[in-house]
Length: 259
Image (cartoon, rainbow, N blue to C red; front, side):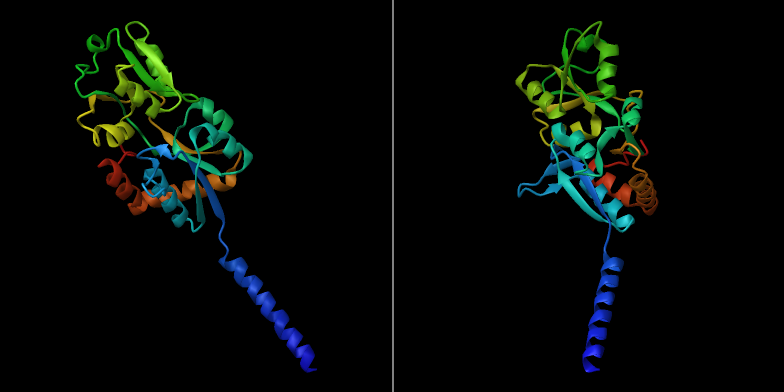
């Protein structure tokens, strides 16, 4: 009899333990972002991933009470990581273009960017056609990249366009004098280069709203309704609570969703 009671107690304890695990277990959202994309995602001197997109991702997970598994994935491997299931979402300023939305599920927007030129500090380029004539302008190419299309449509009559896989590659060529200007995301270029190295770089010309580039969102596998719905709920929550505004002003001094 004592043995039966003991076994019953052990069994009940096991059931309770399993129930506790079920209640306490959280879903895990696996997020990927490029570790060389300051200020959106970059590594600290001690090798930890941080940045605007990192903090936004953490806030999103907190808003819907899930665990965040944020992975540093180089740009070149990001799409394959998403398609293979290594990650559930890419949160890294992906443009919500028609081409991309045909292949992936997009949630957003969470950024409405402006575009601007960055040049060397001693450059006389002011963003006008007269000062860009005969110059070489670097742009970042991507699937459905709107800045590249804008360059194609705008410069072909008076300047040369040079495409790069990543904007930091264009900046290296700008510094070396191999190109004359870079057209890209104003938030990134200002924070990562002009603000930190004012003796080397400066922003020039007016802020541009390029058609097709105003909205950037979270990218998921096509048909992933589970995470799409939850991320939309999370984004609405952090915007309403003021958390988004807080993080945006921390990095950019303004709200980059309500530009």
